Length: 463
Ligand code: ARG
Image (cartoon, rainbow, N blue to C red; front, side, top):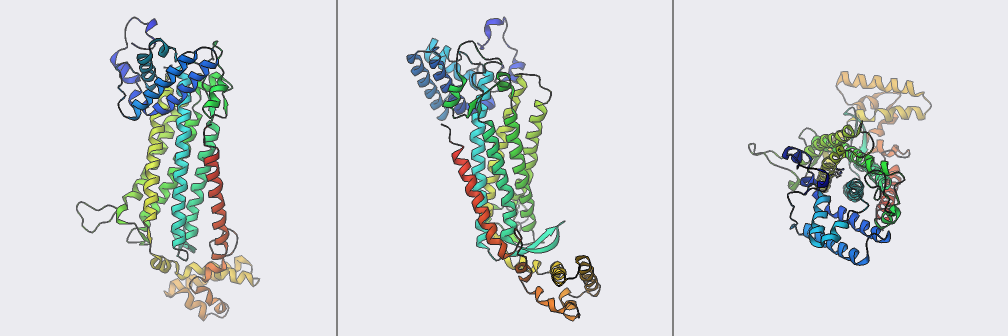
């Protein structure tokens, strides 16, 4: 029997059933759905719609049902369309009439909106905390290779030598913005839709603020129609995860390059690489390739939800059921990538000698030469021109730039800029990649990590 059999004379066609049932994927919401139902039951008591025996019985049944799910022994009945119907059906089976009261003053529309917010709130916190662990792995790698230098690139052409720690921190800053964004989304979604009913509230005198408080929501909805039709929080979560995925994808691409024989800047631990079924010598960075690839799916999930939402008339529409699989998938995928990349970077061996050789390419000092002239009062454009001529000459003659500098009258005094590390030492401006600016950045990054850890725990704990 369906929840609405009163009005209907024939049962649903099997094709519609197959199209519309969502239990097959939304059963994973059982914990959050039961959380919402418990708060609802207590709200019904305060409103005088349930007596205390009924409340005790219902709360007990909900706990038993949750335990059945936890142990994997919950049995779906053929008529359980979604997680909500399954739980209500089971409660009614256990308690008879009392169970049949659980859906008083509630619709699945406010119920699913509540459940999804509770699920997403927890998931965003979990992802944020995995990102922070990943950032820690990057910081450890930078610290373990404190003096390591590599070429910094623009247009994938060698540009200037940079510290490995500075390079890794560049990724870390992007990831910390992701954490901040995930926590912003979590703060914004922390509003309870419970009590909005199907779309317009109820005449039964329940207090949405009461259940909101029990569920650790900051407040209850202001508008019942908005409450049941709003999935902005899912779209935001999907965007935040997609952008995080884009950052992880860029890192994946970089790891693919670094671990290639052409770059040879790094190797990953055997436990984070794969072999080839045919070519015995192969050691492949599949972890990095999959990190690179998953962004496609994360972006796809965001796109699919936005397209579902566009053009929907107020208020609840069944289309909204399509919010779940993209969200579940994105959360699952990004967690897989974060966990594997954290391990992969922890296993990474940086080939400091190879990277240093690449960074000692004498053309990378060209800007330092020009800046040396500028410090002596030469206008920058003239300094640039002069060094540019010298570079052109070196290219034509096929000799290292430093040889021409040593041989020239006007530049020979700058030859010591070509000593290993000299270019970095001079680069002391705030936020620059040099040892002097380095310690300031390290502290700043550390404070940001602490601030975000505070946000994660303080704002996250439901009452
Ligand atoms: N499974 C539904 C969803 O995910 C629950 C709400 C159903 N509401 C309805 N009026 N059919 O959106």
